[in-house]
Amino acid sequence: MGESPGNETLESLAKLFDRALRALGDAGEEDAACRLAAEGWWLLREPSPRSARRLNATLHRLTVHAPKASAPPPQPSLSKEGA
Image (cartoon, rainbow, N blue to C red; front, side, top):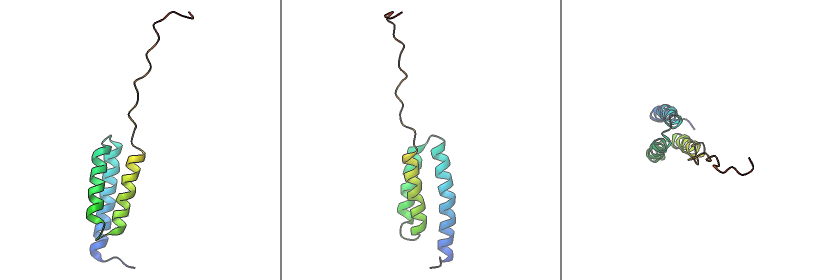
């Protein structure tokens, strides 16, 4: 099934938006990138389902690859046991 010229434009814009979202996530702004990806999906889900699927995949990538909050490093023991 061929895409109309309008859908081809949406697909091109979605690819550009996808790259920007990934760069935003890679820059440490995963939450903002996820919110934008979700909003983009909502806007594209009916006029361009393929583009919406692309943003859905990006949203999942951002959540799976987001850095986890790390625990603080363990503090050295001050006791002299075993020394």
